[in-house]
Amino acid sequence: MPLRSTLLALLVPALLVSMLLVLFGQPTGALAAGLVTLAGSALALGTSRVAMERQLRALTQKTQSLAEGVMFPAGVERTDDLAQLEDAIDTLDDRLSTQNAALNQEARILTAVLDGMAEGLWVTDAEGTVVRHNDALAEMLRPAQGAIVGQRPLALIRNEALNDAVARACQEGASTRLELTLEGLFSRTLAVRVTPVGRDLPGSAAVFHDVTELRRLEKVRKDFVANVSHELRTPITAIRGYAETLQGGALNDAQVAPRMVEIIHRQSERLSELVEDLLELSRLEAREMTFQRTEVPLALAVSRAAEGVRPKAEGKNQQLSLHIPPGLVALGDGRAIEQVLLNLLDNAVKYTPAGGRVDVDGAYEGGRCVVRVRDTGVGIEPKHLSRIFERFYRVDKGRSRDMGGTGLGLSIVKHLMGAMDGEVKVESQPNAGSTFVIFLPSAAGPTAATG
Ligand code: ADP
Image (cartoon, rainbow, N blue to C red; front, side, top):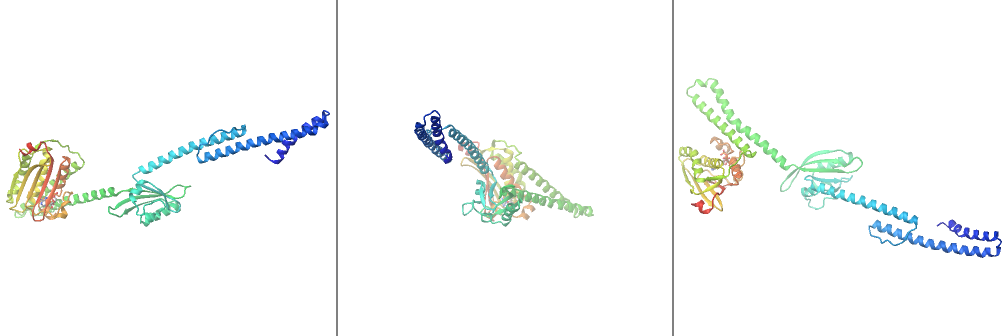
């Protein structure tokens, strides 16, 4: 309380009492009464001041406890004014607590959303230093130094274009899209979009989208289209060339005309084989084909497939021997199994020189039916073994084409086997023949299978 107000509060009652006594004709007692009143006022004032100070101290302690988030025990009685002040502080505290809880909740949701994103994300301050990032980015970058926060872009990704884009976003508010490659054991392609954070907020944000698989598929598609066009162009060019030569007068040349017509016929057959194989492969890849799961006696399937290649084998004076136990019964699609066997036998005959051998064995092994197609042909170098099941992959392009191959046979075999829960493997040595092995689910137990 200010000094003037304190003096007034003490003196005014004492003066009033003294004046009243003088007025009522008691001047002798006026001084004493005035002094007594003064003392009383001083005592009352002192007491209320002590109480006030005590309440204010308690209120200060409470406010501090609230600010520190500590519970404060109630207990000190308040005057009306102080009680109002305390209520106001309590209301303020309630409001702040609610707002804090809402902010915490929002921050948790934001973190969950950011960490749930497949794309990597970092946010920088106005100087371009990373101040925040999500889990996906840490997974993508895995920086040697560990921490990402506090780093400059160039320290995390050695890419000038990205560094410039971050600087432009921070300084000029410009957005940039770019693509970069992260070198490493498995190099990855990232599409990045760098943007300023916002008009009134300094800094930038960058979103990293891993497009490695997308680019790989694009390349596969482009290579496939290029391969198909090339494969189609070869017979078409031959057909057109010979047809034009015939039109140009060769038709009347009894010596050459039949040979040219024969070539046109062969090339058109090759064209139709190619188209058939392409259609088959595309149906398999699109999973448009339905596969039955029935009991397929393998001795029968192998002998049917062998009939398809026997004329060719005999033409090359090759010995084709089949040794499949009659009880070996697979679970699968009869037509698909025959097609697999036909492709493998066709290759065996094709890549085995005249006078060689092709043997087909069957057995029940490890709970599955196994068929081995073994030839004494040209064999395959180890470096090609993992690739011969790819579309259009051929060890010797010239030889394959000369022999009427499309480069799609083994790719179709692999797809068909996969669709029947089976497998195909190859063992081979150059000039020592090849063995293609297929594994199929068995329809019966060991006793029945070997019977
Ligand atoms: P292609 O129509 O060229 O025979 P495939 O997909 O059937 O196509 O086979 C791919 C490649 O694998 C062939 O070009 C050939 O180089 C090699 N190959 C397949 N089978 C044999 C085999 N039995 N002996 C040697 N090489 C083979």
